[in-house]
Amino acid sequence: MTNFIKINLLLALSGQAVCAQTSQSISLAQAQQQAIEQNRRLKIARYKVDESGYKITEARSRLYPLIVANGMYAYNGVTRDLTLPRGSIGVLPGTTPIPLPQQDLTLFKAKHNLFLGNVLAYQPISQLGKIKDGVKVAEADVELARTQVSEAELAIRQGVEKLYYGLLIAQKQQQQTQTTIDLTQAKLYDVESALLAGKTDPVNKVGLQADLANQQQQLLQLSNQIEDYTADLNELLGQSSGTPLMINPVSDSLPTLNPLTTYLEGAKTGNLELRQADQTSQKATLGVQAARKDYIPTVGALGGYLFQNVISDLPQSNYFLGLQMSYNIVDFGRRRSTLNQRLSQQKQADENRQYTSEHVRADVEKAYRKARQAQSLLPIAGQAAQYRRDELKIKNDRLVAGLVLKRDVLETQATLTKAEVDLYAAQMAYRLALTELEQKSGISHLSAQH
Image (cartoon, rainbow, N blue to C red; front, side):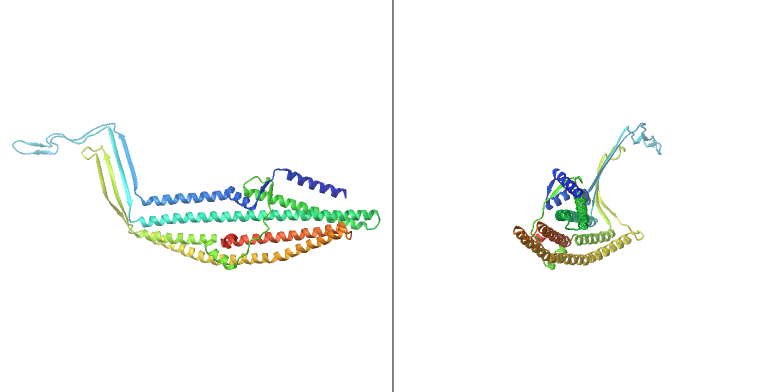
């Protein structure tokens, strides 16, 4: 008996030591919000959205003229003019012969400092439609990235919720086990008293000691489970695994389960998996449109300005305007192959969307069935707990009247605690099932009620 008292004392002291630390009080909504703000993988997904947004700007910039400036300076070390000597071409016969040229003619005057520069502007014309398709593809990538962020947020919320409810249930089970230990200790005390009076067999004491050891083992296992849940929850919250947490209980009111049609209709527009399939299909369609426009000749407006002092006989400054056109006459099937690839991708995306639609409907129906089954267990668990409360009230009244022993009241208290734990676990199972249903349908119980 002394050893069991020491073990219980150590458990009590360890519990007080944990409580003595500064615990962070947190609700389910606060935990979910903190996890969303601090989760590093979610931050990476948000940065992916930013990256895709910059691609829109890059694609849209192709709609406008491309202006390029080039310049060159060179120092000419040896200057030698290109000169046509007098009479080098020949002499015109006559009374007075005329040499050609009549005097030295400088064709090219060499300089030490040479400058050459130009500004070129090109505006695409025939490719504007393809560029606009590229902008739409970039916008589709942004929407896909945002959908992936929303999926990650939902997964984190659900993970936090599971750990949160798991902690609450484990704490309730810990209280139940402690109540059972108190009852066993009371029975053991009575047996030891009866042994001293010679009114019972020693085997009864050994049996109770074995029960007490098993119950203390369960209590330690629950403590370890709570420690693991706390560490996992802290990891999702982005803080040290050893941070003490004091989680607040959830409200007693349970959310309402709406008709199945409500969730099926909501899934058509709210399900993130189906939305992602739609976005992928739209992106594939844009890819086909862009591939078909590869057959259009490339036509663009061209203009520029030129400055040079290399050839003195040419103008130093000049400008030009015009059109540029190019067309790939023979590409040995490259454009056709690209178009066929895009068409194949479009077919894959369409099939995937159809499959996803059917799969989501089946998932919603399955999640609804689980929620309905969990809901059906609530009245039974509630009745069992209420019956145990009524039994405890009767036992307390009889204890006051001296008709029952304190041990009898403790036995009823233990069964009541177990019934309350079962009810609480059923409520948490219903909440989790409803959360999964809301995730599949893309609607919450709040929006479904309006």
